[in-house]
Image (cartoon, rainbow, N blue to C red; front, side, top):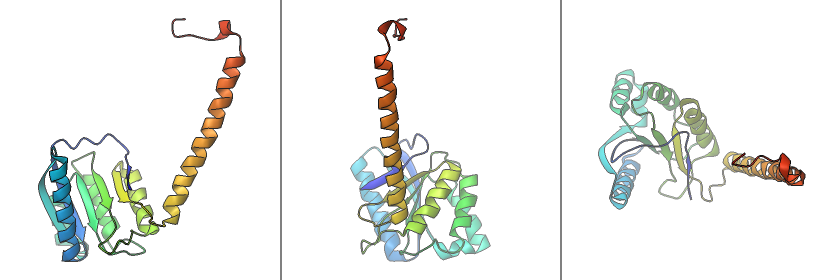
Length: 189
């Protein structure tokens, strides 16, 4: 299942600029092919420009600055990285700079399982969720069978809150229904 954490209304239109941050060329090529296929299946969305950047180059000031410039109009940044317990050194700083300088307000970050089916680690997903929350970005990730305890705990907490809110709402409605009809406000009153 693909989960989308949306903090605004995505308005990509028909043209979408994409940046792929990768650590090996095979992953970048696979991600590019996946995006191309998705674009063709969607029919309405065309990838106007896909810019791949190797993650280790984002640690070098000249290339990091060039990548920031090129990524300024990105609608989507996709991570094609091998599974790790944390984001590669310097990537979070680069993303912070990009998020503050981006030209597309409705931008999104995406991370998926790697070629072997291994899901991104819970710490990586958590780091990206915090970043997207701070900057009003959308976040897309594949959480099917991932075993990510932190993500599962977050979802479980949301469900518990929904149950609590449902019970509170039910009690409120029951109280309203017990009151005499003349005391209730109707739509035309």
